[in-house]
Image (cartoon, rainbow, N blue to C red; front, top):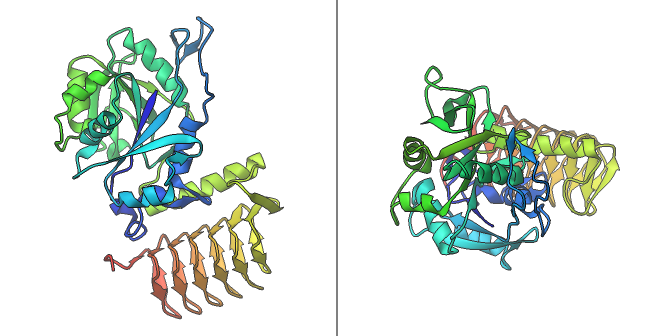
Length: 390
């Protein structure tokens, strides 16, 4: 089976972090986001078949001998595609074979799906996933449910998650069989038919591609899904498990915190090569920790935490210097950052090579872009710098 991963967006909500990198290259607990996403496909064994004819998923009996082996993932690229090729030149990510389909111009989510699917010659059922969704839900189970739905005319099955505020997403209303009655993209809160949203993971039959004009800007959510609803061929199923859309600075920080806490509970390293130097505190390589690092935290190779510095609930990238008297809490610090003495970082993100002057305070969801210099004594609260790509 083929997986299509949509990674072509510019990541505008994450600027300035995405001025120089696609958001899927940004690290989450020490590992590029795309590797966290693709683990959902790479995790399945080479021969993943059902043998029990009575197997049931989501209350539905699933056909036996359903094969959901993922041989390849095609990345639908648009923004800074060279960064993916440079990072993974051999076409392997976590053991999964990947290929690159670079859009000549933005094609929207629907156009990107068709472009990528045709790039690898899709002729059978395939999976599509948004590249900024982190989840531990079972793609395997979603495919199995789709094969059940296909018996009843389904051409597509969407994986749904429940959220408190569905107004930022595609909202689904379905009947007891899973057939979708309404698909409303980003409704106002009083118009949302349910709290179940498109989780950015869906299974499609190749016939769906015929609904998408070639090389045109098409939204699969606003154009294709409603057409499938009208034809009675769009189905959905609720998915259980962790799910997070990482498209904003706040959710990006949350993703890092979630992974740190998860691995602390499991006592497993959050990234290959990490060793636990204290309970819930992980180190990769040989950072020098003279100050205090409180769990859950991750400190990468070559970094220095000076005497009197306190790091908690944070990720410190490679070759950083956290000076004496500094405080870092619930934050992400990328490689090569230098924080001078008595500076503070809280609920914020520093991109690579940022310099923070003595006594500066960076708090409340602030994001500082690559190479920026924060002057001594500055107070940054809920700001993004620089405001333009420089």
